[in-house]
Amino acid sequence: MDRYSEITNKNQREIVLLKAFPCAWGKCSFCDYILDNSNFEDEINKVNFEVLENITGKYKVLEVINSGSCFELPKDTLARIKEIIKEKKIEKLFLESHWAYKNRIQEMRDYFEIPITFKIGVETFDYDFRNGYLNKNAKFKTVEELKEYFDSPCIMVGIKGQTKEMIDRDMEIVLNNFDHATINVFVNNTSSVKRDGELVNWFANKYKHLVDNPNIEVLFNNTDFGVGD
Image 1 (cartoon, rainbow, N blue to C red):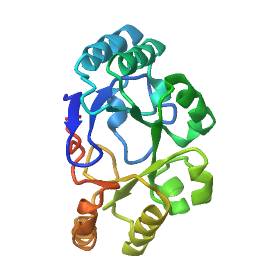
Image 2 (image 1 turned 135 degrees about the horizontal axis):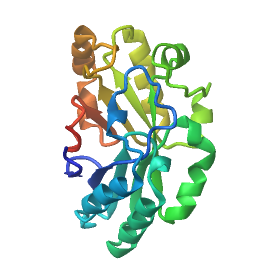
Image 3 (image 1 turned 90 degrees about the vertical axis):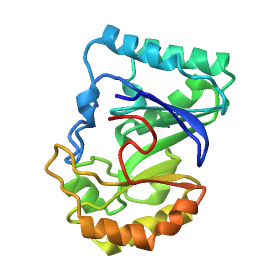
């Protein structure tokens, strides 16, 4: 498991994949990342402290991810991240959270005292597909409601059951409403959700220009950021 990497093409930053307590929701139909979670706080902190030692601050930007939301990281891990931010003079932070924590987002912004780009796994702006088939439990109704709390949506493409029209609408919303977004091309995992290879090929061809868009990060594999396995 690679837990530290550097993103050197767009939005240059260091990134760490940390362990955390179990995801508060943990019922998304497509997700098996929660297998990295643990209930043993000492074990979690031991792993995380070792990973955090890799941070140099060379880009002045850090992204912290885990298999869930940043609110599921232990307090000691959060405190160590805050220490490193000060030690390495980091000026910007990327964090991710589930919609369920929307009312605590400001709490995390206040805690770290530097600008935070808050990501959220939207997967799609199609309400029924997001909360029905994907079981995301992210029940916002409008883009404006989402933007009250979050800065950067993560969108998933290439799932059987998605349509080209659905993806077109998602791309239109992302490009017209957000300064940053991540597009994840679905890769088969241990879940029952399956990849639609034809849809992936269509997307890769129609939206290949996004690779050159400085505000959009397209991940064709789960490990394109250099972390995970």
